[in-house]
Amino acid sequence: MSTHNNNNNTARVTAARRVAIFGGTHGNEMSGVALVNLWTKNGAEIQRKGVETRPFLANPWAVEKCVRYVDTDLNRAFTPENLSAPGGDELPYEVQRAQEINKIFGPKGSQEAYDVIFDLHNTTSNMGCTLILESSKDSFSLQMMNYIKKAIAPASCLVLLNEHPHLKYSTSRSVARHPVGLEVGPQPQGVLRSNIFQAMRVILKHALDFIELFNEGMEFPSCTVEVFRVLESIDYPRDANGNIIAMVHPNLQDCDWEPLNPGDPMFQTFDGQTVHYQGSSTVYPTFINEAAYYEKQQAFLTTRRETLAANAISKA
Ligand SMILES: CC(=O)N[C@@H](CC(=O)O)C(=O)O
Ligand SMILES: [Zn+2]
Image (cartoon, rainbow, N blue to C red; front, top):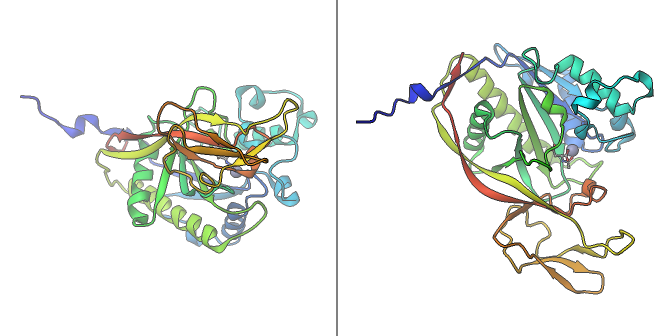
């Protein structure tokens, strides 16, 4: 007879004693900037027993100018090449900043790195609350996300998994042992909306509660988590000069996470023609019409719905 002893599958995970909350990785995404400024003045709300939680403004010059970045996108800058590049003051501002962040919270990939970095972002897309996971093997983050989803129900919080071989990028949070992105929208760049600010604040509360419980020895049994796995980046239709010739179709606009089927309307050209989705199966689009992605040649991302199994975890 095969016995199913869950204890054999329990992952032993070290306590999360050092936690950082990054706002302003992008200087025009205002909820994270406002929350980090608030918590820097008074950290009572983010303190938990047995945890040191550090609020941190990741890109202060971009925040000051209220732009996404000054020289280059900080949330793409944490590559091994950048982190070891000589050049000091000559380097692009965000590369210098990535090196500083890596010194304070890393080094990336080492045992001395921070346990968790929450990286707070806003999107102009109608994505609601979205947690961004960087590895399907990260049981600790998966368990945290499962806890958050249950804690905020019936409100919803979806999980975007990006471990795509080409579309994954080197984020600020990737310095930590457990990187957790939090993307909340819709909110225009440079604007604060109270509902979006509040939604982000509530997610952080539950995330920190989870860490406290875990550190105190609570065991979390194996579970499953629904995630949306990044599949493909879809660009706007363009002319020979690279100029956009169509917009997101009204049927798709604001319909993040809703199924997009082969043949469904996707873009509308300026002269009123419809461009249809040509994929071979149903996908779940997200980051639809995100303002910051025009420069990245991305109108939206497609994802596939998956159910991931998370190991039981307990404190090592
Ligand atoms: C709109 C935006 O900035 N989104 C983030 C997503 C992430 O943090 O992974 C980015 O592109 O860096
Ligand atoms: Zn961002």
